[in-house]
Amino acid sequence: MFIFDRPFSHKNMPRTEEQLNQIRKDRKQKIMDTALEVFAAHGYESASISMIAKKAGVSKGLMYNYFVSKEDLLGKIMMEGIDEMLPLIDPDKDGVLTKEEFIFLIDESFRIMKEKINFYRLYFSLMMQPSVMKLFADKLNEVAAPYIKIFVAYFEKKGSKNPMLEAIMVGALLDGIGFNYAFNPDAYPLDDVVALVKEKLV
Image (cartoon, rainbow, N blue to C red):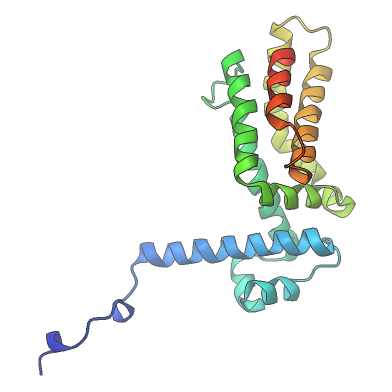
């Protein structure tokens, strides 16, 4: 009997390097998503690699193929949220924030938050844990520093008497809006608040 007469199954086909890379990427993301849930629910200090592995349905050994430690895993999660939002401050990477880019930053930040509300609710829960901030405060400040300078330059150009303070205030304001919306999305008037922020600050 010819082999071509047999039922064909995709399962018997060897996976390509591209497929294998996608599997690894998906598995790593699943571990990170699960870890975020566990860290938010149990606290970073109380959560363990074993808890995360069990909930994610993988072995501890497999987890260590992707993350060298619990702290490394936490760091990757923290940077996932930061890497998504901070580049919005300077989308064309020219080091200058224009009025149009400021409006884009505000609109796009909250569009992403609406789209990924569950992620950001857990992310804010994680950010509020003292042990987490103790571990990553320096790293967060280092990553944010270039973008704060861009904000400061924007307010200097507008003639602000204290551009640094104004830049810090804007960051705190946007964080506060995001926090309130994440934990009370049905009742929080996000669109109205965002419109007012653009009217008053931009």
